[in-house]
Length: 402
Image (tube, rainbow, N blue to C red):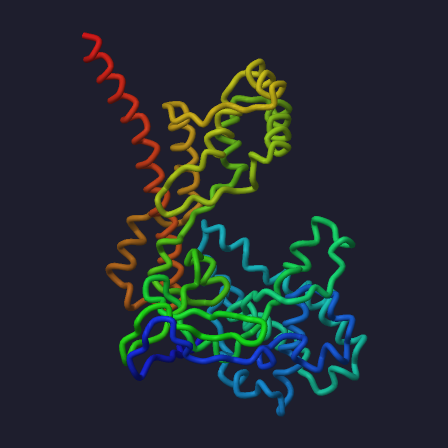
């Protein structure tokens, strides 16, 4: 993805509106003639609506957004475009299971293509190929924003609870802000933000900006792995938002290894009912262990009588930080490390000895997987400190008693 950027030419005070884009100039289905030609699109998901709108408008030589489309990249470093050898460098990272290429192509065949085929007149002359779909989807993935909308065009009462993923939010529109792609992202250097209203979207300075300074927006608390998946690039400042996922099946296999299958399954069912057991747990850069993990571990360590008493009283064990919990977590961490094909030390050496010589994609892959291993290391330090603190307290109590 080509790097483009814009910056200040003069000193800019904080809270200055640098530009304002009328609401009518933002790329949404309601601002395109496509929705007028196919009113039924209003009932589709936000993703479907915007991708089709982008495909439709990007194929029109006279589109009012022609200059914007011409500024967008046509080559991408998002994971969707990595080859198998490149993706292998990310082995062990949960991001590999979030790329969604197969799901996207299923969406194209089972939804996009059907809409196009049923509305041939509207899509005459429009590039509706799979390649055009992937390009439009990549633009939406990398550069779209969710802005609050004044009205609701969908029947919320008619939707099931499980429809949230399909329809996105009923309260927001997924939009593309023209030339928003030219503002770079950086957590630490962020100095501007997009501020939407009912009539416009403004780019506003969030601090005093000296002349000849590049403009940055804050991408939010998004780990580098997700930025790589969605945008194809990241700033190193996003390392502070890195996470590593601990899958619940790994946690259960270690904590419940001494239980029978039926006992383990019944406890899983109970924990799910109480919304204590998730598919996976995100561990953040500080290595802190969520209390839910500690409760789950205790639920698999107690005997049947104790567990049944907890279930009868509709409560669960307290989150303990003891030696048994430490040993469970240390085993989980070791098995989680084994999912990677390289060690933390090897990755440090790769970046230190040949980092500049690495290709861009391999370098990003090594940085992402190393970031996750650093969290594993921090987690180990955290859990070992529990027992050290307990032992110190015990020794102190003995001294006081003597």
